[in-house]
Image (cartoon, rainbow, N blue to C red; front, side, top):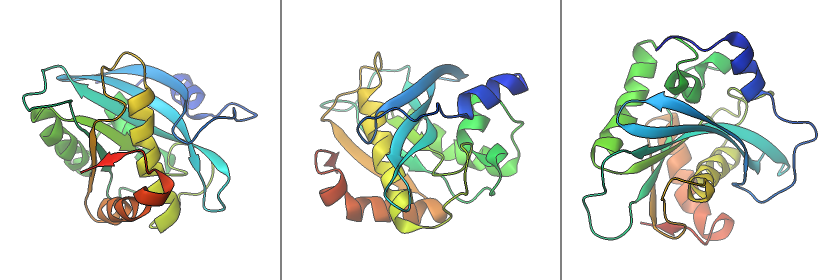
Length: 199
């Protein structure tokens, strides 16, 4: 895909000031992007930072264009990316949206996503705190990464027009940094997001 104009990138990743009030997982802004075999929406959503203050986080919600082949409602899996870099250009949502040219690492990130989509599973991908959005990236910091993972699932359930259930089965997946973020999210879910139907 051709990169989007630089102004479009900056506008999307710049949070409104002041940040709107709302619940963790509420969507601040959204933008439809193109992705093969899925309806994809880049989002900015509310989560909590390392000091438990509201913060904006970006990510992508991807819903397969094929029907869910399993029984019951379509599941959502939060994809927690592995380490790709500390710069804003390394945010996986930028790669998915075609804002930056993909490299080998970003190609591997999307392989994880494509594997889930091929099984009919919806994907909620987070960029974590400070990747894409202003501020420092909270690299391997357990609590804010776990909260960003759980809140992107909430955002997926609240995004209008996806057909995703608000109480369906959810899971977390990731490798390396993403594995740690996913494990922390599972541990934190009973207290931080008890309404999620974690499988």
